[in-house]
Length: 288
Image (tube, rainbow, N blue to C red; front, side, top):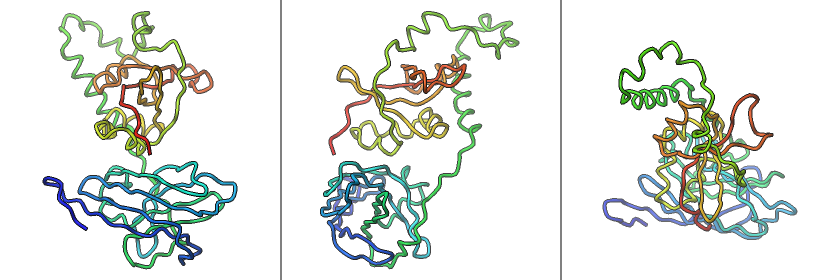
């Protein structure tokens, strides 16, 4: 079914969710409702009678076919699912490996640690589920994102009067000790409880926060450390990007909206480095 939302066309459809053995669906365990648009898709997953035994979590993947073999793109882990699952996944082209995969997505796959597999397929095409492949992200050269940050810092420094920078060129590589003012401004004295998340989990925040998933500073930290963090304190939610505190990094972080630095616990800190999280305030997560 196609509906129109302003200038945006939204396609809606329902597909059954089956448990698979090898390449054969053996029983129906529920259904999924899909609402897909040009730039965003929402999948409501409903199932019961999963028969997971003692297990209570499933890994969730989107997949697209390559010669009948599903290539699976990891979306996160769904917890507290036994014996039922009720979950909403929201994704964009940024969550499908590469943007070109967005229109090729052909279904979802749920997998347990013990090997149980459940899938909903958008079409009647045969898929060799037993031969599935996990999509691997190609590393993005750090130099590319470093150039972005360097340019931002340089743009900021160009506003400084020439006489203020005269004679300083030879000292650019010297790290000056942090002042108390900087410590008070950026370094948090307390250690809030921290929850690690993947970038696609930003979709669980209110829609107005989704744009931060493409923030250049966030992408820079995410591709270096492969995770983000959420922390909550005094009824406020913060999204954090892992990183090491330096003056240059602080300037770039502030330009991109990450104005707070929370130092990590001692066992997380890198030797001789001030490791922590550059944070920005976000609205509370939506309930599933």
